[in-house]
Image (cartoon, rainbow, N blue to C red; front, side):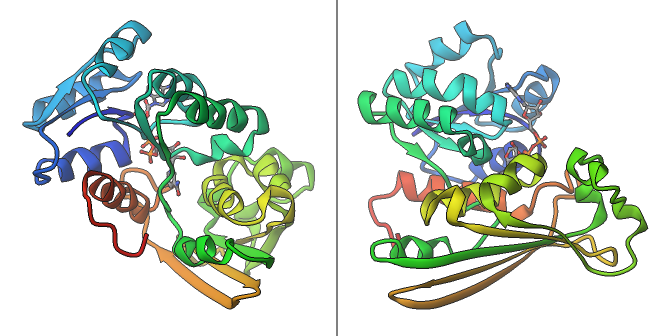
Length: 272
Ligand SMILES: NC(=O)c1ccc[n+]([C@@H]2O[C@H](COP(=O)([O-])OP(=O)(O)OC[C@H]3O[C@@H](n4cnc5c(N)ncnc54)[C@H](O)[C@@H]3O)[C@@H](O)[C@H]2O)c1
C-alpha cells in the first residue's frame, strides 16, 4: 500500500515514524506548505519521499497512491479532499472540523458518493464513537459532550472577549459555553474536531449538546461523552495527554490515524 500524507506537523510526524514499522506500507509521499518540515521527514524516514505541495505535483502523485492522509488544516480539507475523491482515491481526514461547515461537508460527501473514493474520519481525540455508531442504528434521545481544557486552549477567542471573559483570570473550573454543537464550533473554531466527529456520527450539529469548561489548574484535554437512547446509556471519558510539540493536539488523535490505516490495510476488522 502507498500513501500520500498532507501535513508534517505533530500528527504527520508521528504517523511517518509509525509507518517505518508497518509492513503493509511500502513507501509514502509527504508534502506540506512548509516544505522544510516535509523535507526533514523525508530525510529521516526511510520509506518517505518528499513532494512539492503544488496542485500539479499532488495530482501527479495521486496515480501512484492507494490512500491520502490529510493531517494539515481545515483549509487543506476544503482544497484537497474534492480533488482526491474526484480521482477515485480514498482519503482519511483528520481536520474533521471542516465538515461542520454544511457546504464543505456536502461538497466532499457528494464527490465521495459520485466518484467512488472513500472518505474515512478516525475517532481522533475521543473514545466512545464505536458505541455512538451502534446506538445510531436506532433512536438516540440525546448526545452531550463536555470538554474540559486548560486556559492555553482558550486564548484569543473573540466570543469570550465579547463577553469580557479572560480565561487567564479564572481561579476555578468555569463553564465557558453550553449549547448546540453548531454554535460551539462557530464560537470556538480551535476546539472543533471532537464536536464535529460526534455530531456527524450521532444526531447532528443542532441536536448534539456541547459544554466547554476551562480548568485553570490543569493542562488537560478531557472529553466526557454521554449518550442516551433506545439501547440504554453510555458514559465515556477520555483524559488526553497533549503532544509536547503541539499542546492543541492530543496524542490519541495521532494513534487513531495509525490504527485506522492499519484497519484499512487489513482484511480483518474487529470492533468495526
Ligand atoms: N480529529 C481529531 O480529533 C483531531 C485531533 C487533533 C488534531 N486534529 C486536526 O488534525 C490536523 C493536524 O494536526 P497537527 O497537530 O498535526 O497540526 P500541526 O499544526 O502540528 O501541523 C499541521 C501541518 O500541516 C501544514 N499545513 C496546514 N495547511 C496546509 C495546507 N493547506 N497544505 C499543506 N500543508 C498544510 C502545516 O504547515 C503544518 O506543518 C489539524 O487540523 C488539527 O485540528 C484533529
